[in-house]
Length: 190
Image (cartoon, rainbow, N blue to C red; front, side, top):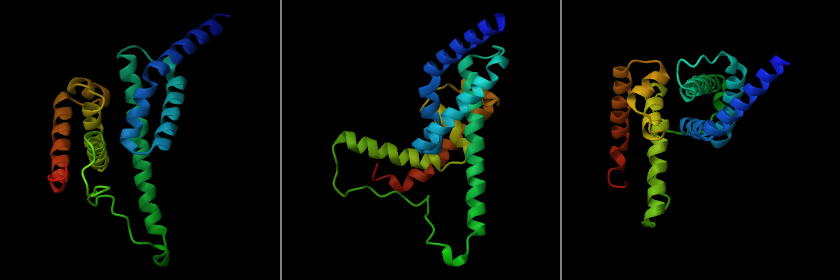
């Protein structure tokens, strides 16, 4: 009966954690992948891992930090697998089956030549920025997303990623520098 009570307590704590952090993890997954369906699948996988390992949480860090760390590891592993499969697919394709390659790094063009109202313009600007951020290498993209969208300070990012504070600062600085380079062609559009 005691094991049942512990299980029920753990389930209540897990549900509370899911309710409190589920949207943040879904947003993180979406920002890292750029695909809603993938983000939802990853979020479900992440919370399955959280549930499976909930009993191992020791409280050395905050619960949010622990879940974030699991999330980042899972999303990063997914991104690395996807990159490997893309290369594998490219290498195994017959030359006749290949279509003109899609250049994901090609500059984005505005949807219409006219200037829309300010709200639409801000949305388009953010789409461009998110697209360019998603093209950054994961080692720079992850800290930048955590800082820009999740509003985490450098120390929290360092703790979450398991890196030093100076390394977190350096990665965010380099990410911003790379992003600035990618934004140069958009100087007059944004």
